[in-house]
Amino acid sequence: MNLIALSALDLGIASILVLLLALLSYKARLGVERQIVIAGVRTVLQLLLIGMILKVIFAAVHLGWITLLSMVMLLMAGREVMARQKYRLKGWWGFGLGTMAMFVSSFFITLIALFVIVRVDPWYTPQYSIPLLGMMLGNTMTGISLGLDRLNHTAWQQRSIIEARLMLGWTWSGAIADIRHDSIRTGMMPMINAMAAAGIVSLPGMMTGQILAGSPPMEAVKYQILIMFLITAGTGFGTFAAVWFGSRRLFDDRERLRLERLQVKG
Image (cartoon, rainbow, N blue to C red; front, side):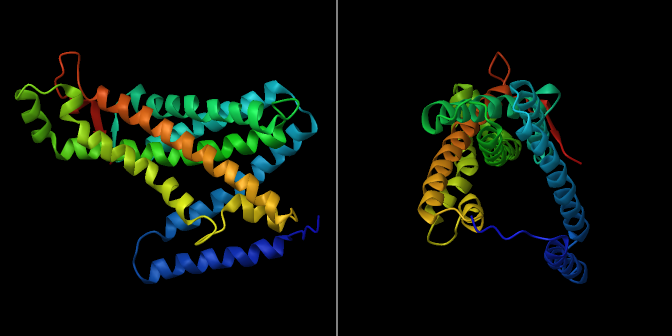
């Protein structure tokens, strides 16, 4: 492979562009310059840390260490799902619902890919298992957070409509069905758009990375198709499960709307 190594100077030049964006935000009074700088610093620190961890794990392939890293990734993704919602469920539900939905969808589909499609031996080889799981969790996290935020926010805004339907004899599921459907579509839309634009409007990240690393273009294309299908399925299943159970949580056993179970992010 004709891989061109990047130096610290090369990355520093790229970071200047982010700093210029933060400066532009400050001049335009957008109020996001601090978030841009903090996100950039976090990107560097987090990726350097995971790079060192992966170097150790790749050198000593062990299921226990891979499982531990996978659980840490899952818990951090669950925290991000909770943090991205303006209206979220109180207590354990705010963290647990999204985390469990990601666990079921992302881990299940990753295992299918490793056992049935890639068929690597051993199946937990970190070169394949960690990147696949990371892409699954990252995209599923976005879909679930968008879906739950749309569900809770819309239910809060349209509580009078939902309660009127309940008084007319509707079931809890019917009273919130249209909101639930819109929320699921909202969570799935980014991946649908990404599939529709792949190869025409944009070259997806994994494919671009493989080509830059020297992989044959057609091999990069095949892996990108695989990844797009896997993360779309994972995002869809995870969003569907999270929004459905989230909508059920908004009602009690007597099918009464209970918006006091929500808290508004300050």
